[in-house]
Image 1 (cartoon, rainbow, N blue to C red):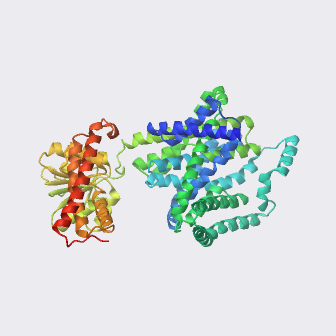
Image 2 (cartoon, one colour; image 1 turned 180 degrees about the horizontal axis):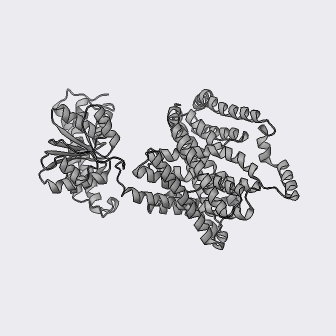
Image 3 (cartoon, helix red, strand yellow; image 1 turned 90 degrees about the vertical axis):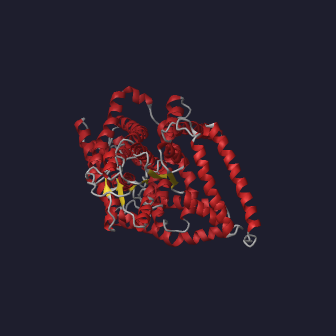
Length: 628
């Protein structure tokens, strides 16, 4: 017990110290966990032989992560991904395997060993990639969805890979054959697989299909009644227990028939995606997933054997970089074939260029089956770990590139603008299209610009003319009639691009009236400094209306709630203008004392004004009774 508490304290302390520092530096939590593992393992030696055993336990975090991802995917969405799964994912796995295999054979490895190495490095890290994509909010981008499709295909491909590796085994000496036979006799894992051991091929297929069907039917017909039964007990911890039981039980069933537990958990999540208990399951599983994934990353860092690394540093680092470059080239070419461009293409390329945690599984299995020599096994484990360690740096490289990459499609030239009008609307997303409809319906002509070709094409289908191109380019704005326009509407999604647009338009036309869309209050300050006249926070008006509904239903009359809404609106506009003079882009808001003091004063003024207004309203119009 004492040893367990000591080890737990070491792992938790390392995570608590390293991860916030890494996040503060913009490096991401994954790199923080890996650095924590390196610190307590190879450098300080605070953890030792138990790391490998703990890593197998921590891999369950990957299972939980795939279950949560499945909860966010309806079966229809999964069917819509079939082309990416079979095409993009299948081609990536096959081409990478063959490429690495040829490279290993050129370095002198036998074809069977080279094929095993190709299979190992064809896989990418589901844990690191999905965790980082979620943290950065990139899961729903084109590159993020494509990366997820490839990762899912790879997880499925692990099953035939495990079946293929024993066929590549080299003949063993008689003494090793006898030792392996004795070990299998007492092996719990061998007993676990007794459901399929000894069955003919069709029998294995039936058992496997039966397990998959059981998972689907359980999710459809059994989970809901069980949840209702648990709900009747009104014990919050029972929800957590049931959520863990679902994941553990389904993973165990998959393990019994030789399938990937992660794949089984993903299938269960997809089946439950339409369940009314979906959000309950997410909230119960999320904390365990985060802790186990973090523990997994720490064990990867702690498991790096620097002794082996320093014995041949140029070879091992060279192989790691060679794997990343080779996979990156393959991913880049496949991305272009599947019409990924710009930021999506680079996200897809850089996010999947590493080896993955399933590589550890295949290396261990290959060693047990005498496919890969023991001396080579240590080198492969280090190469896999190093590529995973480099992955957060690849995401940092993506962030750097994405700021410099134009989101314009590389296959389309900007449209030639042959129309001008008094109103220029830049950006035709969910914000800009409402503005455009209102102005056009009132009988005024507009010129619409956007860098999203699909958005422009959709508009044209409805008879609305728009022009494709980068709206921040001066020549495009001038061609749209900036010199003669009366109003410019900056409705771009990208806050930085919107600020640059406003600043340029103000320099060119000091008399132009500029209406700008802002993401948040900080963006409002930037737009004020850039020269915008009217600034609309994209969520402000809708949030204000929602607040009025709340007031109407907790005791105020409609008249009183409307007065409160109006007063809040005008006071907030006044506050923003006043605080804009105190705000500085060079000083963090939390460290700007003058800003904080004035913000607190304005908040107190608002509270006093609203209470006073409420009293005056009741005196002026006593017929407007408050709701009980």
